[in-house]
Length: 385
Image (cartoon, rainbow, N blue to C red; front, side, top):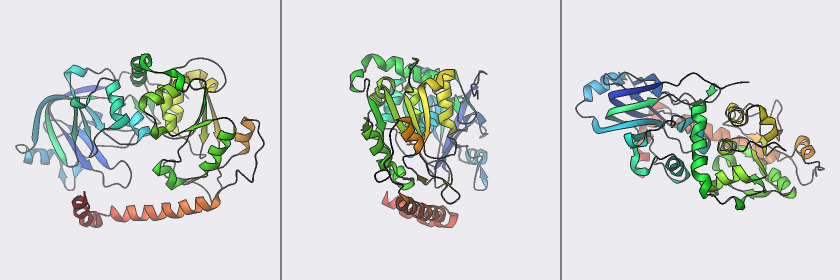
């Protein structure tokens, strides 16, 4: 499948435009919507974040953005700067790598400030990523929920990567630029020629929806792999790992998107062991591998199923789960080892527990985001904050 797009990406410069951020009233991590509007309050379609689903609101309740801007024009905050629209920021590493930074190509750092919509400030590895492409903290402008801000000029670039639709060389150039800038300062010896298993066991979300990784991790340790936890690694360490380790194994999801930092083009045994936690397709991962490795993908990547599914055990979606994981015959055969059932058992109890908690969590979220409940609860939550 060729998802490469060679058609030129769109680019619009909006004079005296507005950037608005609003609550999505959604129980997912995509809790906010943001977008760019011209001086008449008309929505700029190019500002939609298609991949992450952050489609900008055309109206809030019964009032259109246009009428809100028109009625409140004199009271809207006006920052006299030229800005570049990043979009909605989500503090989730996988979505950050493909849905948030996918406009940040061909930057003119000195000419613009960079605007993002979020109640959360960009920090840690997320900010380090931006610094690697020249966007320092003093260049960032944050717009919080229910804010509308006017700017002298707003530059909007089309997304360079949209999961399930296309990828572009412009998007790839973002990661190549980071590699070229950082590789001179990296100490490759810390991960050189090592076999690494990247564990999700400390991820809060994984604890809610992935049962059985303990046995998977134990299996890889028995086969000579060292265990690391991605959230404990700096951005530089992750870049080193994905360029110098001999073999890297991980459960398909956020961790696998770090392949974007890989620059190797050598032949040999598969370097990346992608452990599939469901029969559902991870389109984002497939497109990333296609973009980085092209026709040589099979020389670098192997996909191995580690899931148990039937008509009773099946995840609701790739993002929601829950997933039942175990050491499958396919995984054992890949390492030419004999599976020991007494050690690598299927943890049905843990799965059922996660399934129950997941159902309760879904119900609580749905109740909270009912308009009347949200209206009553929001003031109390804001007081606590």
